[in-house]
Image (tube, rainbow, N blue to C red; front, side, top):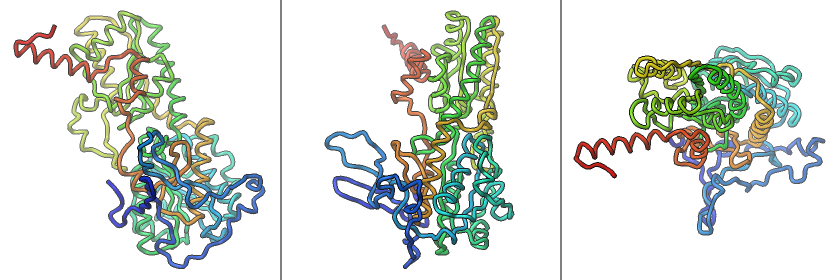
Length: 473
């Protein structure tokens, strides 16, 4: 997708192939904007930290694996507090909004944004926008204080409510301008970040002194560039409960099969990591790795083999896997939800029924299949300890960036370091499992499942050779 049509990427080049994909700054379009001393220099929490202000030239490389002849490559601006800020604390009117589906950690991000603004920078005017983007022009707001958000990280969901769609750039920016909001923190996935980019472009066109900051949210971990998204660790951990239940059910019945459907519309990271963590899974199916049901090397053949060997089997399938195989998939391909996401058929129910039909009708073999879909249970839980720490870092980095005058960026972790990433890099594509990578190979070695794509290719080649009169030795 590239950068927004209204702007060009802000690229800074250095020696030895160094490239900084920089983020916009309010000084780029507001001349002679005043600066102020950072109040953190008088904050007792930071007085013990050496060099707590980030140097203006600090950056983080996107790729850290290199050889002696490699160029230095693409970098992103390092996140953190700057010596000079572009807002006086009393003048800041901040707004926080959550959009899209639920995800563990949303309340933690809200809490830490409020606490960072209030305790680090002395910002007292903080609004929560209710109900996603449409809340801007529906005038649904609540006042947020450290006291009101103190315990919300212990609860799942979002205290601000959320919704898909409802994005009207002009109405939203009019509302921001009318309310005197000058810092906007937008928590959401790639569709939400695209909306944030459009808001930023309209604000820049109007030359408003408003910082627009994104915090990436996707339970599927499918946002590019960043190491991972918040809530992902919690989702993998919570998925273990469903997989364990499926394993107990499968192990306790004659020819027991447990099928667990996990999140993963386009990317199979949750299914892959949950499978690796569990060690009880016999087969993991994800969108990036096509599979087939019948014939040599197919899922049915492997399931039958595993049942004869072990007497039970556990299958984990991501929601986006095998969509091309699902009945009426052609009609579903063109349907989308309000966020622009493809509406999917329930592949878990479909594959469960297919397996039942195969063994009951074709093999006349008794099986006991149990299907578990823990999707909404996983989405609704509070974040675990690891995600709580990560949410804190994301939120504090976002606040530091806004106060320093940066705008039109997403706060994200790159190679273990907090960075500021331009919106266009976050929305240009999706992070997907690379099935030629070592992590997928580790999964295959853990489950001992066939690589269905390879098996299908080999069987097709064999049939073609036989048809042509050539039989392989």
